[in-house]
Image (tube, rainbow, N blue to C red; front, side):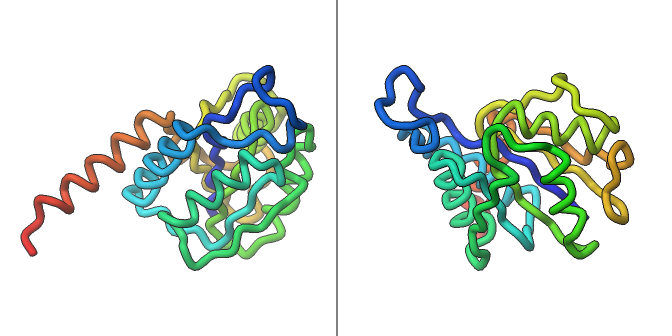
Length: 177
């Protein structure tokens, strides 16, 4: 089983937003960078079987952009277990209940995603695993993915994902028809 954790893209700053935090949208720059990061995920051969997202607008919109590039056939599933303030153990329980061949793309927030990563990699919730906006990590869970028994496959900041996507696009353009 693989869990791909990705933080939402760049959103409008809270002090510049008049609505609720739940409704803060992505900026145009945020949308562009998420699409570029999605191309990087596709270049890595990412083939999710599930796409879960926080119900917050910035995460949901990130998931929709990712779906367009990475997994157009999947439905975006909103999960409260990915919302701001959620309990990392609750998300891990949901993921553990999935089939062993599942590849789950989870779109959420910080510090929550870092807490989930630390829980499954180190066995406890730590603050040492920060995700940049539109950055991602792939965690391999053998069996049910017990806390502290998972393995990190890769951890990529958004710039590296964008570079991977750009390289893949350039390679495709050079290939003869």
